[in-house]
Image (cartoon, rainbow over all chains, first blue to last red; front, side):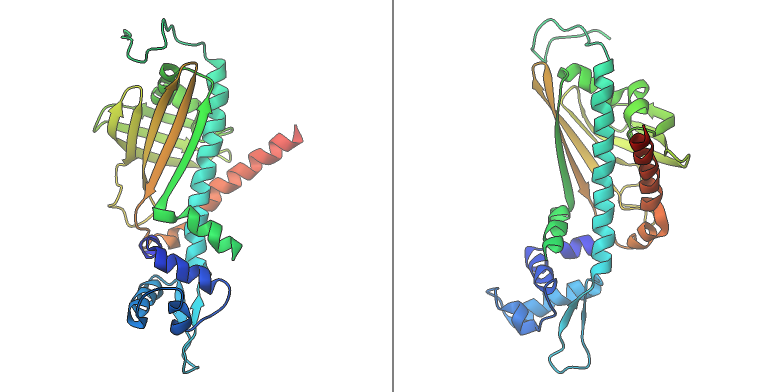
Length: 114
Length: 160
């Protein structure tokens, strides 16, 4: 859900804006050529994903960024990247220990028997 | 602000793209990437081992793997191959991809090899699906377990 909420560039823009400070729907809509209703729709998606919350006390109901689910996702993706970085370091080192298989030309299509 | 910017690029379209150049011809890279006796050595990185690694490298074939972290925790993995074009392209995903609602988020992985004579370019595109209901299990420590194993290795390396 977090990922699908982030799949839209407008919603990512809204989150980036909210990372600087809370904002009203009107403020969030400013940079976009879209209606307040359209922006509200995006906010509903972000709210359902737990990525933003709306203030209740103030009449202008400021939108607030909820960083935790975003962090869980990015942490996982970063961990995945680190996993492959390590694996590929290991892979490169392993390749060096292996003798090259016989190869007559540089043509990848040369037939080999296994 | 800068943190968010870099974070959202990491999840942009929910893909991770990585690429490397290896000093080996394409046939050799393919071989080391698709044969269990090789994969069990490098998969996971330094300190990781694989008590089980069986690869049936054909479309629909299964890759069964038990990944043992440096601190001895075993992670059983099961992947299915979706595309096999020796020696250029290999695509796989977890056998339960898109079905499981628990555990860490899963992804489809596509590796493309490019022949550069004595060198080979390796490009990986990992596509993640919706993570609905999975953030909780990430917090429950799957990520931490692997990360802790790596920290130990880093300490060992520093001590050498």
